Length: 212
Image (cartoon, rainbow, N blue to C red; front, side, top):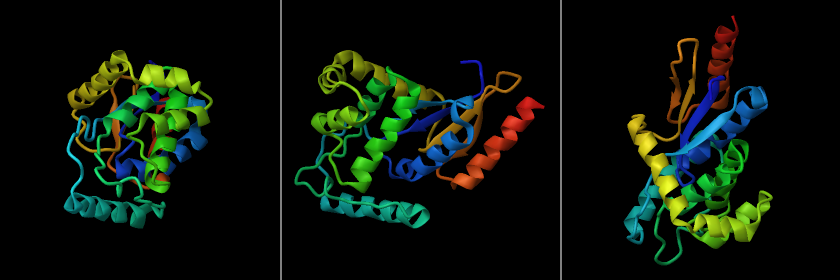
């Protein structure tokens, strides 16, 4: 992709990425298809196998309170409160990757929907059935989605995303990168959460400089 675009390194089960979802929506409103957003799954806690302890849940809730204080987004912990809940971020990330095969635009929308389902509605997005329901809401065939999501190919494709994120040196989610400029270079727009007005202003200035 040679035209200016954004690369969004994120994870569906990253609370600050959930907090950043309104920022992504403001970007899409401000620039539309003139500034496409490409998603790459960062791999927050992929492959986790141990159920969360009470102490771990308390620690996670502290992070959630920080996100709520910064964004005023709602949080519901029904899914996490389930006995034996395993905070494995791979199933939801793989779902975004499968949806991305349809289009980048749809993947961005699905990512936000999965975040809202987990954080705002307390739904268990480690479940293939829940992820398929969300895919159905997005207009995808539920059965075909589940078949693709369960495949070894989708698993490998998702882990390739994690590898790309690591090679890019991304250490915080969300990270938003923009480019290429006239020299073919990409630059960090924000590493971690930033409010929508700040991010949109940075991008407007960048687009003006490119057009000049």
